[in-house]
Image (cartoon, rainbow, N blue to C red; front, top):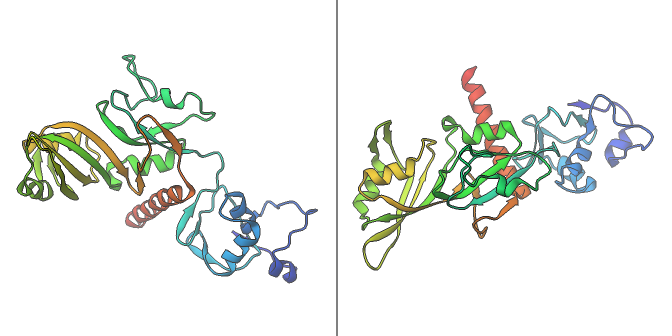
Length: 276
């Protein structure tokens, strides 16, 4: 990040001469914000003056600042901004029976059913087993995908499960306290009963956990005596399916993307701090 060293009047007004292209020193911050869709150039200037913009963790209040959009990290009101227009982010409500893969060697339905018409190549962040439906993130941002999918970063996920039997408050407490599985003890961050079916043969349970272990929800509920009949992932980090129907896909909103990027950057920063 660099700062202009002349023409104070131009800095105050945010003026930019059309004859002078952006120098190798970088691009004016307000121009970068406008190009990223944060706000118009004029409103972006106001955000900077008000101290609401950070570059690489430092608040910037001068309009003359230039940045390198390929390396500098920008946030507005504490929310990260994606400056690379080539990056794409989608939310898919994956149906049951679809494999979380871009190519299934066994010929089963896979994610190319939903991505075939996209101009860019994307891949799935993490996996849902074939019989689990719900929220899956697709992107071409490898750094973000690594943070969101890796178990060590602990991004929370919320599932709604239809299970066999009548779940009691004691079972819910057991899920919170921890369940012993073959690969170790696992605890639900949150758990609650949503509904008891009238025939008492089934219950609806909501579980939130941050583990990335394979088929973890199914294994937990099976361990407490309530095998899963149907399982849906409703949320992933700050993202929620909302009214997105099964089989539908949409791009993330700027707000949703900002929330994901903020998690990614803060997690990476925390890891780097621990390493040092």
